Image (cartoon, rainbow, N blue to C red; front, side):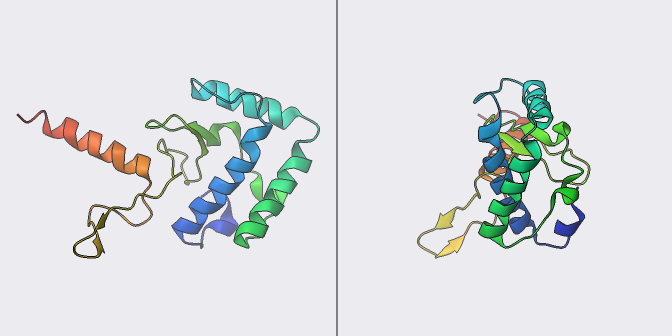
Length: 150
């Protein structure tokens, strides 16, 4: 976690916070589509160089505070570097990596839920807080490891 104040908040609320912050900041970037992470990171760097960057970031933090009730200041976002912006391996959408070592490659945009209608329970494979992209990635990795079964 690159923001110490959010370290003790549950994972789902952290995901909501960074999803809200990323969705607020992305419209201020120059491009709508990115083919690789380097372009996204360079776009964030040029956004940081803009004179209105701190003003927009403060507005984004206020937006997140209103939505989720978590108060952060600009000084808390020292770790918000261009390397924190990633492209999801599954869907290709940009997202903010908030994990401690910045190793995340899968976005957390949509929570994965699968429900058994007859039994009124969720599938065991649907991990709490896992994203739809994570579950798709996990399924593809398992299929590759097991090989093609005919």
